[in-house]
Length: 182
Image (spheres, rainbow, N blue to C red):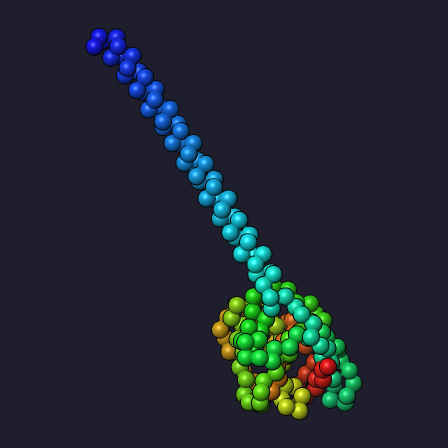
């Protein structure tokens, strides 16, 4: 083979290598973009799934009224009821929003000392522990979110009401007040 043909052949091979490198770079770039797009889609769909999963958005199941010891009405709110073991365990976990006029009423089969935590709970709460006579016996205000810290009742309770943090101070709800619901 002549020297000129060898040079031409070498030049063609080098050109093909250069094109091959450029194609590889383009493929790597496209692959990286696809991975980023896929990650964004997965993240977005997980966020949407949380918002649309049953039990993760407020569902009005009744109304609860806070009463002074004298019987005078303090405030009425819409409630969601947690009266099964599953619903009590789930509680307000994973919720991102709850309004001032909403709350959750936990109903236990019998009166005993209760203790709650804020695991997977994004909303700071006021927790009101209520005895079988529907009298508030313990209040924990402005609970710390996303923690396993224990918030126990100081006396046996059959019910627990959770409302947004600051609710008790805003409406003057105190230990000794009562609740009723329908």
